[in-house]
Image (cartoon, rainbow, N blue to C red):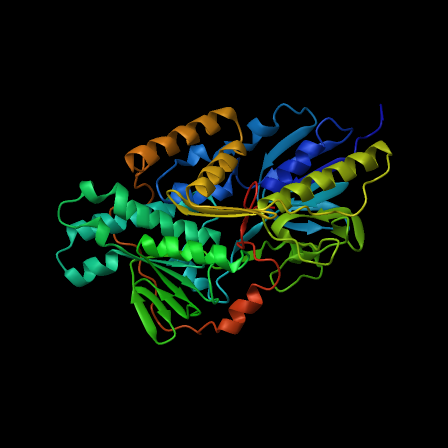
Length: 460
């Protein structure tokens, strides 16, 4: 292709899928531009460890430029994508229009509050470093304010933590808060006993971890109960405010609420003007391109993908990575004039979920692990798939130290309003979100279903 203009491939999103696509295109006869609104890639499966003060943000995030910088044909652009002009083949962004010959959308998903966006201010979800540090701030501030108050009713509210959603993120978060209260903080306070903290895990469905076999989910429920986490199943949340949550007629007063109940795809379908499913995902062809445009591909949480048997592909990290690598190979073959690979085939690699210290469940085919050996396997897998030797060593050392000392090494309260009460939102009643609406929003493969080996989810 000497002397000819090289095709320009634009990848929107530097999550698991976007990075795999870029790596597969490294060294090809194409100019590749990776666009992301952040300058870093985040290892989302361990964000809850940042939120629970076990790890620092730098332990689970890496600059995108440092990951891709050694590939001369790949450039990185930090920008916010606002739309796509399919006729002109341009991506609109806040830094201008970017032309493309081939486009890969890997823009992930965001929190879904089932038609109640006002809940986001009082019940943050966990998708970004900013989310994790905000949740960490709220958790630690709750203990600080409980130490300072002399009102027993207010102290009880401050020491009540409600986690909404019984998937892996909710299970991990509830277990981590219980461990903080029970193991890390008791010696730090004089007027309040952190061990009296109440942690409530709410799941609208009949049981936790719906994607796992019932006996493994039962083990997780027993492990959480042993950590004194209260489990509430079969009761969807109908209202959230700054003072707590409502489950129909039941009310739980709580100062800290964490949302882990559902996600909705990015606005890619609206940008493209194409059909989407109930979770906002773009329907794609077997090769992950748009049915009416073979030069636009959609992967990860942004896409509604089915496997060879017509079964929905889950919105997990391994699925996004496999899809990204597949599209990268397909375009590399197309540019080189080689035969393109056949339809995308998803290979399930197993499921896992961790409760906390020495408690996890793993399922790989017919092999099942639980308890300490499951937790050790979970730890090894996550350390292995971190980006860079430095981070593997640091995370491994942190976990070993935390395991031996029962401490949390990143208990820093940072961010705005760290010394004042959270801003109060209007507490007027809002339309209730019926359970049917929650079930409808969760149609298809739940992005927070079982954690899958080697990674769990989430970005496209």
